[in-house]
Each structure stands twice: as structure tokens, then as C-alpha cells.
Image (tube, rainbow, N blue to C red; front, side):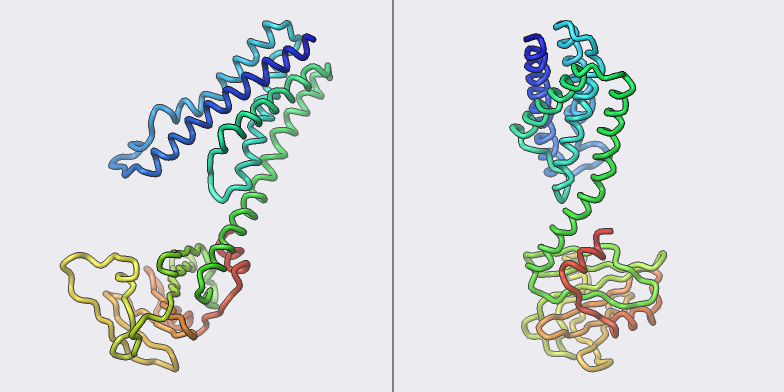
Length: 302
């Protein structure tokens, strides 16, 4: 009966603590998402340090409850419960594309299960070395597995977004350059891929073929106009371009020479970044390759 009472106390405290901390996490996440900071840290509230310190407080309360009920190994049981709960939350996050607080009910279940497991391990009267080994395993295994699971989750989420975009997924085969990021804008059906080589980087932007596309007089929006970066009151955009090959044009935008390549019903921009030789940009435009959603996700999520 004493063991059942200890399990009940520990599970209840773990559930309440996990649910309360998750509720604070939800509120803090919404606050940060809406915030437009003027200084570093301006978007964080008192909830952040509470969330960080909260697990220690819950663990201490479980330890006190176990001590009050006469448990022999109250501290190891409370620590094992905290570790098990943290592992469960970490594994939950591994299957989320980005850090997202779990629902409060799920957090409560994880907290109850974690601290109940800690009490059971503590009540098993294992040698201290065995309990220490269990703690090490509980610590290391989820930490080791998390990066692999999280990467697979992010790749799956990215591949799904790429597949739904409806434009060719293009990368360039240029010696030494590799894909470092790829983002989608579903509202504009725009794919942006960044490729880097050391300090040099270029971007590949794919959009549906613009209405009225008729080079060389009208070659579509400029890069600044695509991203809404054109400064107010600046000179009008130059929409014309000149041909350098079949379905291949170039246009000067600011200080950059942007290449434009038509691929069926899509227009591909190859935009040089800082310190990119013109020859590399031309090579990239001439060696565009379409890849599958899974392949692009694999390249973009390292």
C-alpha cells in the first residue's frame, strides 16, 4: 500500500508540474511569435526562467513527498523520474519539425509516467551502481537518438512541402558548391535554394512562368520585387533582358548579373551573392538539374 501511495504522489506531482510548465511554454511561444523585438531579450518574459527552473522544483517536490512517505531512496527515485520525463518530452520533440510544446494533457501523461517509473526503479532495491547505470542509459540513449529522429522528421516535412509546391525543384551542379538551405513560399509558389562554397554563395529561385513573359522586352519580376525588397522611391525595375542561349537570358539588377532560365512552365533565377565569380554563376545557370522532393530535403536538411 505504501508503494501505491508513493506512486500516486509522485505521478500526481509529475503530471501537475508538467502540465503547468507546458502551459507556460505555450504562452511564452505565442508571445515570442508575435513579438517584434527592439533589443535582445525583449521578447522573453518571466515565464522563460520559470520554465527552466520549474523541472528542478517539481523534482524537489517529488523528493519531499517520497521522503514524507518513508521511501528509502527518495532522491534517486525523484532524479530517475525527472530524467525519464525529460526523455519522454525529448522523444516527443524528435517527431516535431520544430520545437513545439506538447499539449498539456500529453505533458501531464508524460510527467505522471516518468515519475512513476522513477519510483518503481527506486523501489526495486537495485544496487546503487545499477541505479546509476540506469540513469546514464536514460540520459544518453534519448540524447543520442534525438538528432537522427529529428533530422528524419524535418526531412519528411520539407519533402512534403516541396512536393506540394508545383514547380520544378532545381539545384545547380557547380564544382565545390553545396545546398545549404531550401525554403518554400506556398502563397507565391516560390522555391528558394541557397548554395555555398566557402564564403561564396548563390541562390536559385524558381517561380511559375510569369503572365506576359515575353523576353527580351519583359522577363518577369526582378529578385527585389519577388521578395518585396525594392526600396520605396527607388528607380523603376528593369524588366528587359538579353538572350545568351536557348531559353537562357541575363539581366543586370543593381550590381549583380542575374541569369534567367526557362524550364517548361517555370522561370529559374540564378542570383549571385557576395564574392561569387561570374563564371560560377554562368556555370550554375547552364547546369541546372531537377531533383525529387526527397532528394532536395536530404540536401537541405544536413
